[in-house]
Image (cartoon, rainbow, N blue to C red; front, top):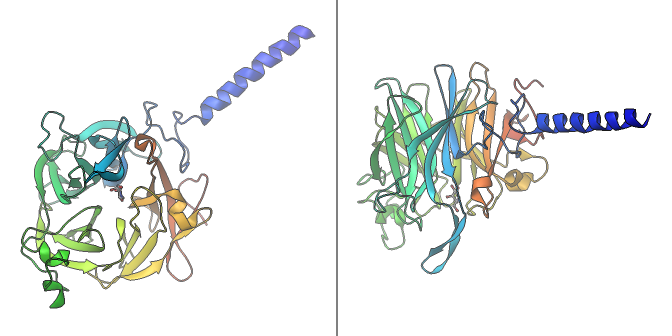
Amino acid sequence: MKKKSSLSFTALVFTCLASLKALCADEPHANFRPGQIWNDTAGQPINAHGGGILFHAGVYYWYGELKEGRTYLSQVNKTWGGTRVIAGGVSCYSSTNLYDWKNEGLALPSVAEDPDHDLACENVIERPKVIYNARTKKFVMWLHQDSPNYAAARSGVAVSDTPTGPFKYLGSFRPNAGVWPINVTAKDKKHQETNFLARDFRGGQMARDMTLFVDDDGKAYQFYASEGNPTMQVSLLTDDYLKPAGKYARIFIGRSTEAPAVFKRNGKYYMIASGCSGWDPNTARSAVADNIFGPWTELGNPCRGENADKTFLCQSTFVLPVAGQTNQLIAMFDRWNKWHLQDSRYVWLPLEFDMDGKPLVQWRDQWSLPLTK
Ligand code: DGJ
């Protein structure tokens, strides 16, 4: 009798261990588990922050910031300027089902040997996005390139013949030098001392948090937090997607909008975005426009559920249309861990629409595709 019970105890321990292992993130996923550690197919936590996804030839490619190593306090003008990690470059993962991601390595590495390089480890490489240009057959990456104190505020561009890279870095610039936005006013052109739009007219507009959007007609646009962050700008790209085409507009003027994620539904343009509070979460916002250059109408906080007023303790990064499923959208967020940025998590949730036609993101502990009502 005694022997039997000790055997069952051993069996119980093994069963528990097996169940625990099944729960662990290195098992293939059958669902999304927002905020949980998300391991790649090799059993390592996915490291692709502030990211975006390209769907190409039946495969999803997830590009993001590689945030590896010690988080440290950065100094700006001898005062505390927030936390940072050494820039690791742009990572790339591939998947055919959106649950299981294979690490494809660095699509664009940072540069350790040259502190003056744009992509130097000491610098900032954030919010990379990749789009495919059907005309040139090139994969084009845009990213937020910055100096350690975020004063440079530039856009970096890289190209590749393959989605996984390595991408060739072409350099960085401040967009739209020498061009006024299409909605400029006479007042906007004055007071260069205090008005960043006018101050930066010659050298180009500041560009921090950014995203790319490709419209149905193949035209591509960059959205970027500008003018020191209070105002966003949306800028048409050249047909090869490598530069600004010289047509841009100021949007969300004075609203300090960051973390833009843009998508289109039923002919209208939508944006999910955040306010501006460093790595700390704030209340998400949504907006709609008939014309990509505006006017954009704000639709309020799309989040519902616990911590909805703090974007589920996250910040938006991308909205992904699921391939082959009409109006099935995934809102992608980063849950930043500002004291250990490498351990920042991913929160992916279905993006739905409420009765009034406003974007709605409901918290779920876990969920899977297709989302049926
Ligand atoms: C908020 C931005 O959205 C992030 O991409 C990053 O730049 C942090 N600020 C840095 O504090």
